Image (cartoon, rainbow, N blue to C red; front, side, top):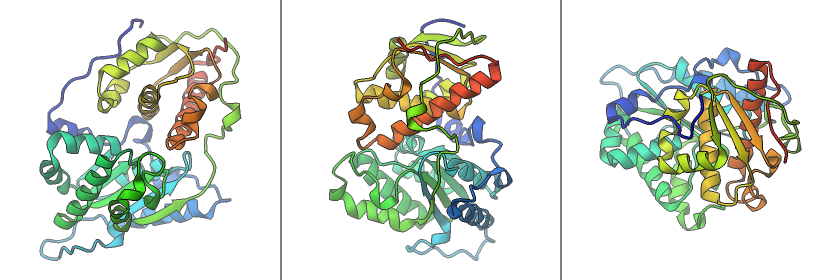
Length: 340
């Protein structure tokens, strides 16, 4: 499969969008009993125990016994905080699969897009019908998102019995730091933080890849059957022409992807689009081969890697490395990272 275009996306109506909010291909098999805590970090075992107990609280209550209060009970909202690769998303998906009643599973970016598309009131009506809302990668990139998230969560808890679990690389009190003038919005950020019980998870990236080991593979001859072959500049143009909310739909249609000509990305908007796309390739377990002019550690400009989006870039590189490793194992080939 070769060409210069990604698969086309369809414009779904709101009901179809909501129906698609389920665990991704990679995490559809996640269960509590397949989560393997690193016993060097007691917080991983504690997080597993906490989420197993939390899942049991999501059973719908009998009619007439639920009284809503403005103060949100902590057991209705859990915030899984920790670095990338410690199993937060595994626990999120396992909670979804172990819980009772109507459930929705989506990324924070998908939540923000849905609220923008439907409007706040319509989105609240749609999500309020769920017994459990699982939100992956909770991040505040700008002021509008901060205000939207604060208002949505507060009103969701006031009008419904919905339980919420979210994951993030950032403590709730530190959301937005380094990305916008977060100190000017501490009331909104503090309000979000107060809604959740924070469960912190310590540990190392389970993918066991050090930062300086990325991209050291030598050139190889890679052929992925039925894969889409794209030059990096073509992929960058394709990602710019569609809203990132559609990247998941695109990734789900890709049998494999071979990108050639990767180089250091100097434009942060382009870099962040690639980060989001790699997240979706990872979620959908897409076979991947790369041809790069630089080591993967130099894919993102240094000033971006150490700024407000540092954790996003590090997560992206970790996931890229894992996708290449999975392709190597699955195809019985050496994953290609050409160093020019």
